Each structure stands twice: as C-alpha cells, then as structure tokens.
Image: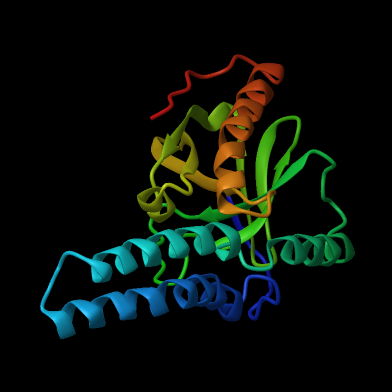
Length: 213
C-alpha cells in the first residue's frame, strides 16, 4: 500500500547528493584514464603504460565508488530521523536505513529512487521517507529474494526484493541497506537484513518460502 506524503521538495534525498555520489568517484577515475588513453593515442600502442594507467583508473574508481557512492549517508540518516520524529512521531525502534525503488523506477543518477527507514511492525513492513510511505502486510508477502541492480554490475550492491500479491496483482518492495558508511559494507549487510526479514515473518506467522539468487 502506497501513501504519498506532502513534501514536494525533499531536503534529504536531493539532486546534489545524487550527483556527488557519481562525481566524486569520477574525479578519482578520470585523470589516470585520460592519461592512459592519451598515451595509447600518442604512441599508437594498446599494450604498455597506457593499459596499466587504465587498469589503475579502474581500481581507483572502484575504491572511490565504494567510499563515496553513498555520499553523506550518515548525515542523511540523522537528518531524516529528526524530520520524521518531528512530523509523524511514529518511527519504530526496530528499523533500518535503506535505499528504495518502485519496480518501474529507472533513475539516471542513482539506483535508489528514495532513501528512508524500513520499519518492522507486528503485522507489516513499512518504508517511510520524506515523500512516501509504502507498506506490505505479512499476509501479502510470498517470497524474499535478492535481485540485481546497477550496483551489482560493479560488485557493490543488490536489491532485497520483498515480493507478494494484493487483489490478485503482484507487488514488490525493493530495498538496499544503507546503514553502513561504504557500499561494500552495505552489500555485506544485505544478507543480515534479508535474514532479519525472514525472522520477522516467522515471528508473526507462518513464513513464506524465500529465495536467494
């Protein structure tokens, strides 16, 4: 169940933060990559120093993406906690900071359509942010599995997909952990969060079959 919230200009998940999560890693990648390509063109050679510079640029870019891809992650979490406590006052103690996307979302800047908290309630899961609230009751959930996203292509992420059905139509809640400071740390946390969802399902009723891919 989707509930849009009245917040036309979000102050947490801003375009600036989305851009910076891409620009900073690119600044680490670009100099060595440009130098490598220049060397190849000037010397008319593929093998040699130019190739090694391209390899170096790839390594530097990957390390920078891991460190800075979730730009100001901790600050966003603290900022959103204050906003939601002041505006709604219904944040549960049992929650995780996550990225979210609806099944049809395709973003150019970031895999995450929104950032917010996955809250564990006795009878439902709730994602809440500045702009939306999405809920899935236990009865609706049919499976929990991993799905690939753009972060999977560089080995730094994947979706946890909570899948179910309502009124005969399939529904899906796509989330990715953001509790840690690095993308690799959040990738490692994904298995723990998936297990936490499974335990929650078992505690509140018969658990559905879960898949990991």
